[in-house]
Image (cartoon, rainbow, N blue to C red; front, side, top):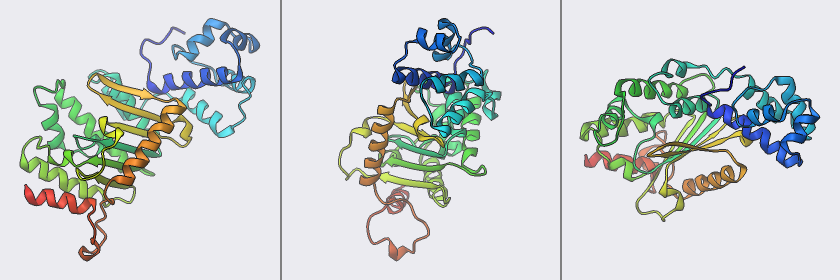
Length: 293
């Protein structure tokens, strides 16, 4: 079988995990390959996600490395055997690999934790708001219609059976950015309130009045699957997506999000009676911005 020319984040992550297990066990690539009857070059290609690994070979490596966590091992097997096909497959030609990776990660998530400082998160955007972003001449988006359809279809993850738990901390700045004009922003803010009615969606606003925080320097999404150790932190940058899966980064961004949620306003809760909003909360701030529009 030839080497891959395009590598998905799932495939890259599987290779990273196998290399991490090998290094933890103290084996060189040559030693590990020899112990299971594999060529060193082939193992290196597996660890760099340039080629596939047979399921039995994966089990062999886990036994060699002393990995006994059955749940973790089965998750690795699932990653290895996955076809990578889903609704996003139809967009392989018009879209770059980054958004496709994000869609596949979201499809396998049990928890999504996100922070945005200037924009409403993509999973929450209305079509009008997203279109205003994608047609802005200075933001550099191409294939506007394909990109818009892709973003809207991504949002189906919120309505699927057994949807992930979604928790977003959005900086107050994003509530004031009038992409598309006043009416578009009004519709977008009303959409946030509507989404907050879903039992698996939590939305908090980080107000201007709160303390400065290191996480405010960048946007990120912490994608957590059923095995949290296999989670991924996705950093959104002008040049594209950056994916972090090492244990240190997962721990760091997990703590960052917890801190953001602690200092943000209480979540939007439309079930409370008006008199119950005795302290400032996220719903009150969104409603205040709506009043000023």
